[in-house]
Length: 341
Image (cartoon, rainbow, N blue to C red; front, side, top):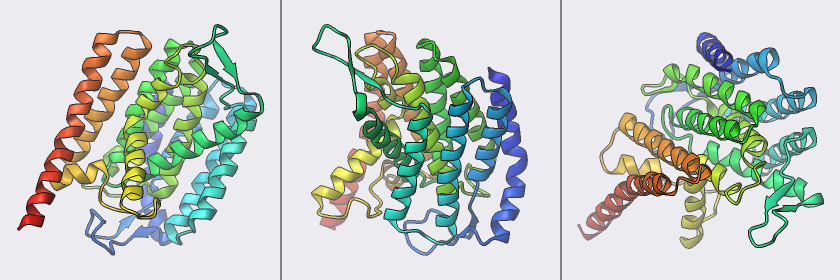
């Protein structure tokens, strides 16, 4: 199971230099134009092509999932990859991107990546089957997770590393749930993401762009449905949310923050958690490594919960909360001090 992940990483690593040349050739280059940008020089995009290629070469060679699921995942991934590639060159409207994500999500659901039931916390039957509601609920989950990964792609190596950690966590959860097909998918995804990181970690030589972030989010959403949300315990819903906790909670708090401030929820700002880390004096590398630590703690906490090891789960999630509290508290104090001055 680990060999395909290693091969995916090698493929992603080896073809990234070619993708850099292709991005320059087609003008897929991010030119910093405002203060939100963390880089000062033009940077090639489309790094997601390398991750996508390493992932699907190994999926078609090594994966044992059904043909319809494999091709459904491939076609849906192509939809979001091309959407992201176009958006990286000529920005698309939010409605068009959302429409394409919904189409990709429906393709996945029709291929078999569907949430069919929830745990009944109060009844005796154990499960609540969704029936016709499975489609819209699955689409909302897939589109939501896809966008959360895209929204955290703000620093060199951040989205790729967080996605790799989440993928490894989901893989272990899938193994615990005896969902070995999902475990294979997530390990291959982790491998292809890690293979891209040497070119994407600070100082980056290429960005994954919307093409890569949307692709990673889509696959993570699909495998969380396949491997984590198909358990029959009361923690079925909680565990994948924690495994994907950094992008999910960061996005949720961003939406709440913008609603409170009376700003459009899709409007970009510098209030994300990685911005908070940066505002207290951490450089890009230390900020990204801190976010990796946070993601790993939440993933480990999710696994501890699934094993019903309550003490370990409380300690791990408590440490994660502490890691989050430090930059938020200090950044608020700094902002108050600046206003007083």
